[in-house]
Image 1: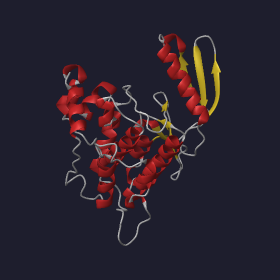
Image 2: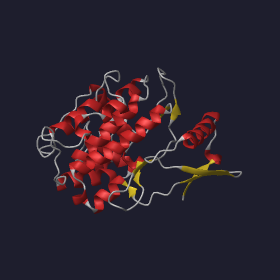
Image 3: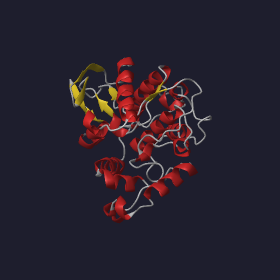
Length: 285
C-alpha cells in the first residue's frame, strides 16, 4: 500500500478542512480499475493518513523516459481509452476531478500491459447535472478556458484529457512553449507567464506543426481538436469521446500509426515533465 499524509497543522481555514473531508468522501465512493483505490483512513492529532492502492509502475512519463520505443500511437490510444474510462465513471458518480494532468496518472505495475490509474482527488468536487462551478482549481497547462472565465462544469476534465493527449503525441503542450533562455529565467523574471498562457487558452486555436505531427494519423488530430473545443457545450462528454473513430479498432478506413513516436517528441515530452515546477510553468506558456 501507499500512504498519503495530510498535515492538519497546515490547514488554517474551514475551507481547507472541508476540502480534505470531501477528498476522503469522494475516494471512499470510488471503485474502478482505472482509479487508485482508497483502503483505509487513519487520523491522529496532527495528520490524516490515506492508505491507498500501491501503483508500482510509476508515472506515465517515467516509463516513456526509460522505454521510448514502447510508445506507439496505438499504445497512446490504449492509454487515452483508460483515461476516458475513469473520467466517464467519475462523472457518472457526480464527481469532477478538476486537476487532471500527466502526473495524476500512474501505472499499476511495471508490466507492459499494466493498467493506468487516476490519482489525487484533492481538487475533486461533487456536482449535480447542470451545476456551474466558479472556484479556481487545477494546474495551469491543463486549465480549460471556462475555468479561467470562472464558470464551468465537469467538461473541464474532458479538456484536460485533450491536453494530455496532445502532449503525449507531440511532446509539448498545445498552447505554446518557450525557448531555453526563457525557461532558465524562471517565472520570477516573467510575471506575465499566466497572462500569456490564459490568452493562448482563451484564444483556443489548436495548431499541429507539420514536422512534429507528420507521423500522427489524421484521426488522432481530429480527436484532439474535438476534445479541445473551446465551447464546453460543443465539447463531447466522456462517453461521446469514447466513440471517436481514433479509439475504435483499426480498420481499412482508419489506420492508426503503429510506429514508435519520433525520438524528438519523446525527448521534448520527457524534458517538459522533468522541469522544476517554477520552470515548468514558463515552458507551458
